[in-house]
Image 1 (cartoon, helix red, strand yellow):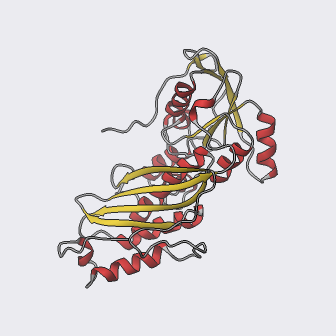
Image 2 (cartoon, rainbow, N blue to C red):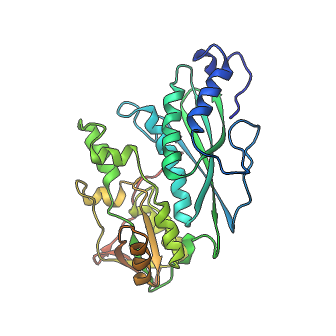
Image 3 (cartoon, rainbow, N blue to C red):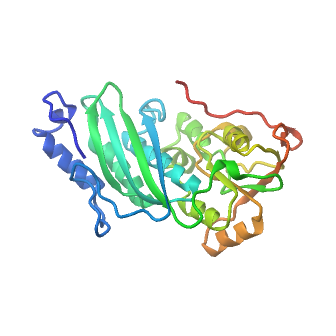
Length: 317
């Protein structure tokens, strides 16, 4: 994990020597057993063993005050969410996690150790180790996470594989994250179950691998809400859909379940829902919930017979 050797570097304000800060951060993100034959934090670049099957790469950026309310949550939560969101992209492809690199930009005075504790906790819990990164000075805290994964065998599950007749399923009820943000704004504590769903989301890596192994046709994670992401999957596959119901998390409402976003559950298209359920059951995973079916007409997109509007969290650029 490298930082510019510059007397204006903000890390110098946190320690007498820049190397001391880097050493502490290195220890925070490296407290685990490293795979034999690999080299992670400490050199100019990481060294990883060969990937099996397809190599999967994705990047996400989390900005303090944009992707997480700095008045309501701690900076460690930003680090955790940044990693979880990026790892969720691996889950959406059915990939196994191999490692991540993280680049942090922060102004002077930022609690970089607390930020990296959040990063390290998410990395450890998801089994996606921090293998390198960078630090730099800037006006606003941002965390860029690039994840590396692998898909052996038949390769990654794409958004574009759904076909008419496939059943759409989701790995869990929706709306908990959005409801958690609402509850936190109303004064709920940080350990409230729904608040935890917002500040410490859980990427569905095991579910993604199970869906790939069960022959899923298409898949993606619900980062921006079912009301946007299912439309995106249908656009990529050239299909429509007829939904019978949307599962709502306890404590959330239907609007939060459809358009709240940041649930990181997986929506899966499959031509063999019974096989999908069986694989999930055999691996001790929660049974996926049926949403409805894909149909041939791309213009036909319904929920309970009514037009299913395209709405969710859209990033402002």
